[in-house]
Image (cartoon, helix red, strand yellow):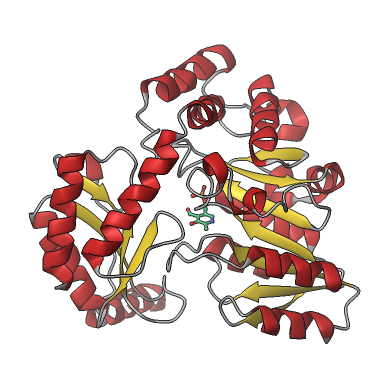
Amino acid sequence: MSRFTDWLAERAAAREEAGLTRRLFASDTAGPMIDLAGNDYLGLSRHPRVVAGAVAAAERYGAGAGASRLVTGTLTVHERLERDLAAFTGFPTALVLSTGYHANLAAVSALADAETLIVSDAHVHASMIDACRLSRGQVAVAPHNDVAAVERFLAARTQPRAIVLVETIYSVLGDAAPVEELAAVCARHDAVLVADEAHALGVCGSGGRGLLHEAGLSGQDHVVATLTLSKSLGAQGGAVLATAAVRDHLVNTARPFIYDTGLAPAAAGAASVALRVVREEPERVERVRAVARALAKGGGVPEADGAVLAVAMPGPREAVAAVAAAAEQGVRIGCFRPPSTPDGISRLRLTAHAHLGDEELEHAVRVLEGLVG
Ligand SMILES: Cc1ncc(COP(=O)(O)O)c(C=O)c1O
């Protein structure tokens, strides 16, 4: 045994002891289940038109983009998707990247230098936290959704520039950020709001255009959005939505964009078609919200702002036991345990899906009532 293997064994034993060991499984081998765990909120990952969009793009442009975007990896399928995303969300421009994770790394690391204060909400996604580490700005963490605390940090700053990081719908608790107030505070203090719309796109706002669009904030100079193509759009990839000046800055300086192969054509083709389906079938957006309301009742929690619901559990073991009990009854639910929770509380995580049939939904609600009641 080397020190390295000793260390691995110690870490594994500590995880096991705390009930925090994670294991991968191939979900397609588990048999048919009602899915309340995934993020394919509108059921588009298997939509025949979306899958055909992926196939057509792969056939036309190849299995991979073949190079980074600044070399030969920019294809018309990317340009079309960028136009579509910008038009849908109301932003002047979009820049697509290979994941939503990259979108956050790129936006934050390119917009914050050593002379930038980064004020981050305490509950932002790991990709934003890692983005802060990658940038050279000083980071101040504001308590969750505490606009006054954000304002205090901005008012007291010594740096000439500042950015504020939030999610419009938080991925763990499922609650919404007060985006209008945050944008107003940013405007007052000459700061930029960088808001991750990963869980809002396709779910919130008119026709699923997101919470920034709903608040009339998309396209404003001091507002930048990031999003993923892997949730409501059922594909893969990410994007930054912003003014042309911000987009140009990212294209020229964002290392997670510059040094990464362009988004795979199949993912871009699928996302473009998915966006069209969302536009043409707004009833999917209505349905996902109705399903979220029904699940909230079943789980005994308040109605959610989006499609994500969180049910607090006494500890990680109870959360894992509830997941297993639901699985035995044919319902797949997720759970968040430390270190994936911002406050150390273990939670069941339920996600609403537009494509759940009425009978499936009734069964899922009964199972939830049994778990929490
Ligand atoms: C809020 C949020 N931002 C970013 C991401 C990363 O997106 P992607 O999976 O496309 O890398 C996720 C989850 O995956 C997320 O929940």
